[in-house]
Amino acid sequence: MVTDKPGYEHLIQFLTEHLSLFEQTGTGDADKTIGELLEESIAEQIIRLCTQHTELEVNHRSMIIREVDGIMYDFQEVLSSVLNKKATRQQAELINEISLLIKNLFDTAVADLMD
Image (cartoon, rainbow, N blue to C red):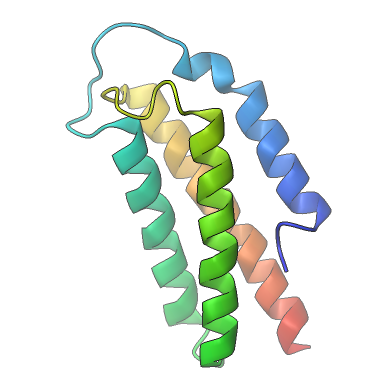
């Protein structure tokens, strides 16, 4: 659905291009870890996606959840060394941007699916 499309490759490339932001040392500004922010931000966007697309059937929602699990696995692999560190403001902003990009990918895939 999404992970086999060029948009997903661009998302991974985007994360890779900004990976140096996660290599910064020091204490984070956020109350949450990078891993917590990543999970919560992506979950929030997927909930928003499912709420906005009421025409999705249960099997479509299940497919989306499986795809998101795969995306989360990939991101956790890439960021494994920093997942438990407190996030800086810049890292939190990037995580938010990434979660919005993920939602956008799924919005496009849902639109294609419903056509």
